[in-house]
Image (cartoon, rainbow, N blue to C red; front, side, top):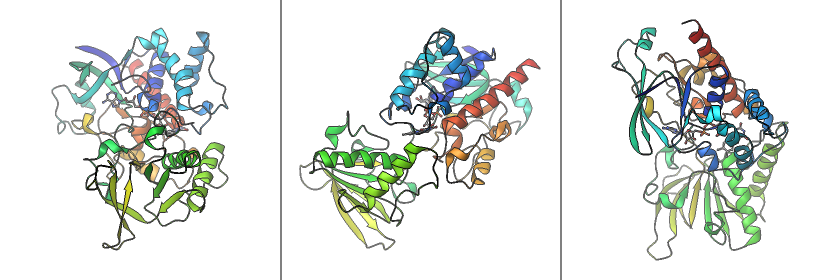
Amino acid sequence: MSHSTVAILGGGPIGLEALVACKAQGIDAVLDERNEIGFNLKKWQHVRLFSPFQLNHSKTGAKLLGESGIAVPSDEELLTGREYLKNYLEPLAQLPAIKNCIQSKTEVIHIARERLLKGELIGSATRTESRFRLHLTHNNQPNISTADYVLDCTGTFGNHNWLGSGGIPCLGEKEFSDRIDYGLPEVLGADKERHIGKTTLVIGTGYSAATNIVALAKLIKEEPATQVYWLTRHDRELPLQPIPNDTLLEREQLTNQANHLAISKQSGVAMIRNSVVESISQPDDTSGKLNVQVRVGSEAGNSQDFIVDRIIANVGFRPDRSIYEELQVHECYATHGPMKLAATLMGETSADCLAQTSHGVAALKSPEPNFYILGSKSYGRSSRFLIKIGLEQVEEVVNDIATSCSTR
Ligand SMILES: Cc1cc2nc3c(=O)[nH]c(=O)nc-3n(C[C@H](O)[C@H](O)[C@H](O)COP(=O)(O)OP(=O)(O)OC[C@H]3O[C@@H](n4cnc5c(N)ncnc54)[C@H](O)[C@@H]3O)c2cc1C
């Protein structure tokens, strides 16, 4: 059984930056990543980030790379996910002092307090007298470690929402999951054959749906037999709501392009507005296609069938809370993010997620002392998280840990 002062769960941008921050403060820390560094990012690495590089890295990370003679991208660069990984996250993770603290292929399954139940010492600081006990699998072999602090940076991207009415799976959704993507397939690259000359149904009205629609529209131009349906829950003519005077050019362009495709009669993108998928089934033939039954409007009897090859469901993600269910984490009943932060976020009114700043350590604290949820998981089901917020969270929490370690 191994012990570290801080256990960092998840090696996305925020987990890695948390490790870098701990090392810079001389705090003993270990990062457990179930796959490899940046694993979730790799699933959308062909997409260009809309935030410039200066918002996506810590000063400490850039300094460490600079000291090792590795040049980092310039502040204004808009990198693809792939470039962000290759030119920043992976070189950072390879620095010897960092690499030695990363355990790849290590999945965290459960966390508890040693010999202390969830219902004991409720909200009491004395819970810290029992260390955190982590059950892991390393290369599929069971393992146990302990820690004084836990930073859960496991993100949400591995845990999608369901596309059915009210957020539960529609009939057939699980059965035909092999033909449903919940993220961003590389429509113009590795996954092109699945979509060119075929019929794709895209569901959702966020930036991921917009990215997929813009890519699919390019396939229609290349091969006019390609068909695209875009299903939205709302009746709005423009699926995405533009942010007034958007300071992020990439985001503004994406919004405008997708909205234009939705209203243009020539784009080839067929809109199905104000609708929800009722069921997915297979027609009685050998075509391998899917029959998607859609309820249009609120009338129960008003349904239409669409025959498609694939579905892209951009319906969001949710945190996996199973790993910490034996801890005293106070969660928001609407977002499943940590309660204090969720309450603060609900009070924000700006449509632009860039306008946010972190809300300090107090907002990240839960009744379970020394347990923090950071990064995109701290926003629960909300999609407004930005790397810049995670970097601020890391700095605040790691400074707080350094202070308590030094006064012990
Ligand atoms: C298409 C897309 C574009 C985006 N563009 C931007 C942008 O331009 N700017 C911006 O600021 N943000 C952007 N974001 C939002 C956000 O910043 C990213 O999703 C970012 O990757 C979140 O970082 P993270 O470290 O919190 O989580 P993740 O990157 O999701 O990393 C979580 C890690 O935890 C690991 N993990 C999960 N469960 C376990 C477990 N039980 N045990 C061990 N490891 C585990 C995963 O394998 C993964 O490596 C974008 C998101 C998407 C999807």
